[in-house]
Length: 71
Image 1 (cartoon, rainbow, N blue to C red):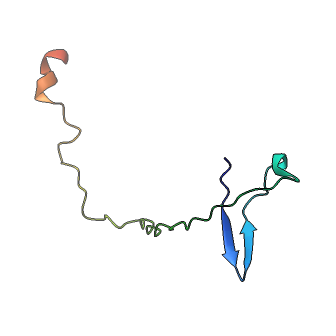
Image 2: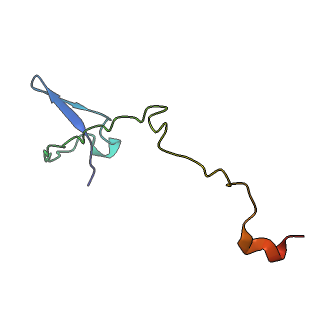
């Protein structure tokens, strides 16, 4: 079985890609199924999380848990 996508406009079916050559001169059966397009998600905008993320002031300070490994 070969699955190809196509668009139907004004009584004409337009294939997105040609049929494989192996079907040349042969009778074929076509099954039509509507494809529901998923709505496009909006792209994130730069700076949209401004003020919502922060780093603790002591982020770069050594952790007490590792004191035995430090000189």
